[in-house]
Length: 365
Ligand code: NAD
Ligand code: IPM
Ligand code: MN
Figure 1 (cartoon, rainbow, N blue to C red):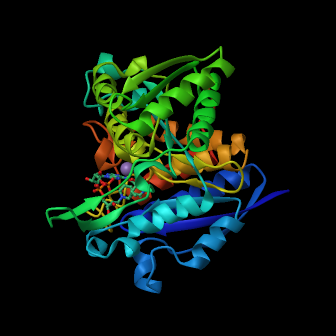
Figure 2 (cartoon, helix red, strand yellow):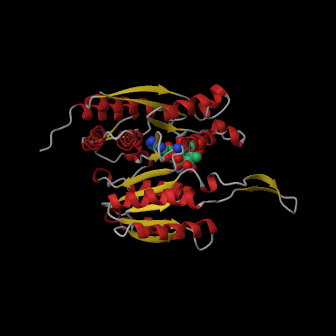
Figure 3 (cartoon, helix red, strand yellow):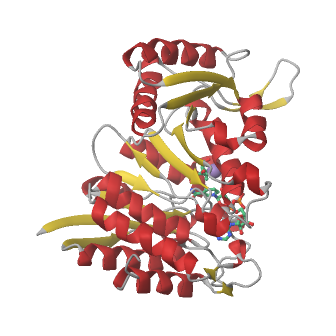
């Protein structure tokens, strides 16, 4: 019997709601495939600060490192926004990503036929979009030194950050992107700001050099400003997008509205070895937290990515993905993806409906 340990990190805001129901879905799909899972729930983010005075307690990182995979809800909220930098929920999340060394963040964005009415783009522009953002996650301006607050020559207060990438940091994420593109449609677009930034110039050079190892992958380069425009103009031109930490953060939120809602997009963060971290791309949605309104599908689909990329259990992953499709086919919608004629449900009911489909999928015609 295959058996795994999973660390659950509910976090803040809608985090506990989406994790609770996603765990139930994960558990059901796993058990149907004869997989045994032990869960350990740990605090992270603002709720960890409230409990332990820090956004990433040592015990949480230790538990995450010792497990086979980590499923995270979301962190952050108004309540903690004014804390000093090192105590902020966001800092806890960054420490977790760095601590697990999960440098490759895979963020798929597809337009599902069931949700074609939810995209803000014209139908013919959005229809059939299927792209993958490969975002570098543990370096760049999020982590670069020097950083901080200070005073300039004129005695004026300043805040500063540094965008820095080393050759090894670029190469390892580029490798993941080429391998990803090779398994998809063989097209890789590297997005940077090499017309202005030195870190991007080195990035473009290393990515270009690596292309020699991948003659089957068609590589192109695009500046970030143009990429943000092209993504809205004609998203179907993209297959795999490789980009740095901050550009990937922004482009993936942009891509979510092509799909129809940020409540739909999952992600997988993986390293060279050790457990992966799986989380929706959205945040803690404080505006709807505690109201049973959140769309749990991004987290449920992240649990599917956990099974596939984190545990190599692709059959159980497929069960979840098929159940999500079936639930949408049966017309169930949370508020963020609702359109007339469908059944409006809350977070928990949406998850229950997915479980129903996992349990007894409608046989293919
Ligand atoms: P957000 O993603 O939390 O919310 C943006 C908008 O999308 C809100 O209107 C929200 O209601 C909606 N939304 C998000 N997820 C949804 C879901 N599952 N179902 C339905 N609607 C959903 O971004 P924000 O408002 O900029 O940030 C709120 C907090 O979350 C901040 O503290 C931020 O730092 C944090 N954050 C955390 C993560 C993370 O944990 N990975 C990611 C992004 C933002
Ligand atoms: C995300 C979030 C985080 C990021 C924040 C909360 C640190 O926006 O996961 O996309 O910028 O990576
Ligand atoms: Mn983000």
